[in-house]
Length: 230
Image 1: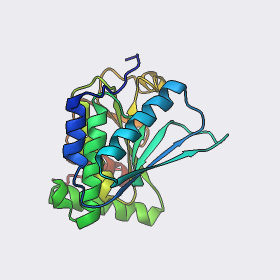
Image 2: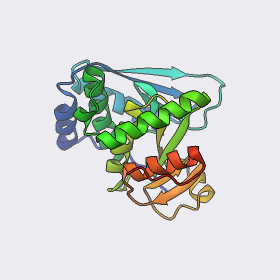
Image 3: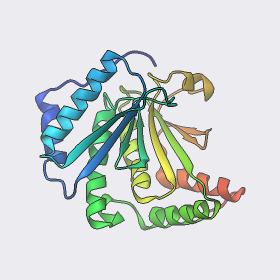
């Protein structure tokens, strides 16, 4: 799980971005934070910014912040509109696709506030509300991390579906983390494949996992017992 990747600016990539972002329903802000990144990472960041801003007809804007000496756990760190949807490391390879699709979903939801428009089931939505209520009472946040690699063809759909949770939730933070960049996580969680799902710093499962099962696990941890939701 090592190596570097970059976005190939092919006609196919441009057409995909134009199709997804060319007619967004509302504006979306992308916040990027870093303390110190390499020239290569900066090149990737600027490439992503240029493609997304140019082909969204001005509907997507990047806000880039250099934080000086403040230490970040992951950098560059992207937020899509709010802190609940994060990409740790530049979204490259197949994750560029999930990044673009998530921007579109954020735009749709911000415009309508209708979770059905972004294909979230009633059960998932109600479970997110229940989790948010518990976390509100505890003044706390929950983290769902999706460990990915840029070459994983199965990871983007997992990320897209879990990012929908971040879109509709107040207190669940979903992070897509590139383990080719943050390779220490492979050893930390004894990762044998991707995508791997980490809930509040504990490995839950490796392999594509339905959102409802991930939320059930999170809720059961909050209750400190197994709860059957579905």
